[in-house]
Image (cartoon, rainbow, N blue to C red; front, side):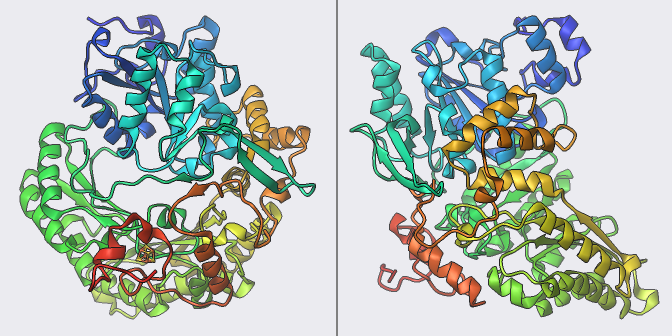
Length: 628
Ligand code: SF4
């Protein structure tokens, strides 16, 4: 049997030892002596969260299809093991071979949310890899970051050798080929970084100098290396029906967050909600061929034994062949007891029909995300959802037998007034009123409306990137005001109100639009014990505030400051296709409360047509061209 990195004694003392022993169903086993490149893929959160991530499964599959590469995995050790590893000096190891991470050629870290930044430092530290990129030598792995947070990598730029901006399937082969060639030629780490800096989509932070104005904003960001590009272009797959997809995804032995087959039906979103970063980053929308998806689903169910298929997309209702696909999946798999789940579905007659076929309606709840309580504010954020549609959707659902409704809103959206906030309570109440118009004998018990609010964080590459974020105190006031208004409603006993913590939101706000000056605070917070900041039981706001103060970081500068039109943002060097000019126009439309039509209705010329495919060409072209 394979030797494990942790002794039986340690495995028996920690929580969920299966997190660290590998050997899951469909794990790839290769002879490490016979490969040229060893790549360790990392999700900087606990195993159960990381194992649910589709992106890692795709890259794992893709890298391991290369004969010369062995891709393994590592997740953040939970705090119990973290302590033991430090005490006993056990180096962090990869699950497949159980070898130390330090022996690998690459450590690829996926950046899914800002609150995992200290976990990245934990991974480097436990691996014995210098935390700052500048301190690494030819003996250390190349540390590469990717994923949504790499669209503003600046707060963590000092910790990475390079970032990959875009969808992994596109230029990773070039990145690995270049590594092999460089190694064969006896090249150094520095030689390699010069090579990859020339590949589209690759950003090597050390090759850029940033200067600041007196007011703290950026004066310039200029390449200091002849191979570094002025602009780093996002890389995306245009043909999503002919690319890598894990037909045999890994299946853990312990319950993970997503214990199911994930079928990604399309990328991107046509809607253009102004608060949504993913909607801008992943433009243009690209749909997968329906037959390809049917075939994938079959293979994945067979190879995993999962009992659920989840359709993944930013807005599933916009997938053209959704009915065909869903009815096929129900027919094909329901007899074997396989369930279909459809998040991100707008509630209409089709959705209700599907849900009544696949869900126990007595137990399940329906989800609406109006995001804002008033029509005015929904127009500001371009949500494209009227009160009429929400009420009708709820009523149809009630008539079909549902009595539970979940509603999601945000507090602190730009231009928000107390009236808009009160609208959240009013619409929750209106939904309950709809329910009670149904004769008593036809009702399914009491209505249960759960309204949740999160606090809005302005994100890079959205029309609100210029906006101020409200302060912690303002968030508190807004939340208390709404709580009071909820209690004033006629049907308040049918309404439950949940809210998120404002302290975490403030941190998110700093990291989301932060620059390189933030790195030292992240380092110091880690040194003072901050890890697992995304987990409320470990999040320590006080420590963060201390380190910001010690480092002279002005929180208001990063969060509650309205930016001027011509400010240079830390992420301006990245080209996502969607132009800054378009985003600014959308910002102005938001202030004017003007709605922009979605990409299917008409093209607004956002710039993503530069990728020459997807919705930009499919939906509007009579002549194969689009006027953007
Ligand atoms: S170029 Fe037009 S169609 Fe394409 S994503 Fe932008 S707005 Fe939508």
